[in-house]
Image (spheres, rainbow, N blue to C red):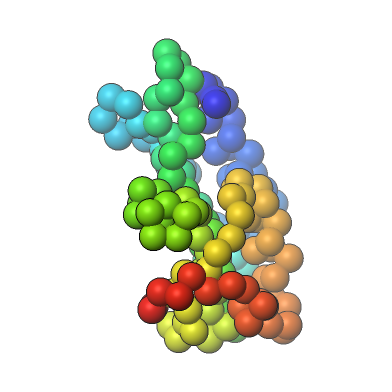
Amino acid sequence: MATITELRRHLGTLSSILWNYGATFPVPTLDHYGEREVGFALAAELPGETQPKATRIELMEIWALERRGRYRISEYAYDFIEHPLRRRRAFHRHHADHFARAFGVVVHEHCEELLGQPTCGHYFGLPVDAYEALDHFLAAWGQPAELGCGRMRCMGEAA
C-alpha cells in the first residue's frame, strides 16, 4: 500500500529512469479519478530509429483507496511497442473479475513478435511491478533476438 506522497515519488522515479535512457515525454501527473482512485498514464518515446515510429513505453497504474490515506494498486498496463523492430510486449492487470472467472488469474501478458499479428490474444503471466516491466522492456530494446512469445503459455483466447 502507498500514500499519495509515496505514489508521487514512485511516478517521479519511473520518470527519472526513462529520462536517464533519453526518453521524451510530457511531465506526468498523478490524477484523481473520483473520490476513491488515483493513477497516472506515462507515455514515453525512446531515442533512436523513428521509422515507422519511435519505440514507445507506456506505463499506466490505477490505485484504489484501501483505507484512510492508503492506496493499493488495482490495475496496471505496462506496454513496450518497438515500432522499428515491429514488435510488442506488455504486462496487464485489468478486468480482474473476468480473467479470474475465465482463467483463474488476474494478470495477463501480450507478446507480438510481429506487431499487429499476435499468435495469441493473452498469455498467462505473473504479477509484475512497473520497475520489473521497465527492466524487461529496456533489456529487449534494440536487441535483434526474438521476444520469446513462442515459449509463453497461451490462455486460449483469440486475439
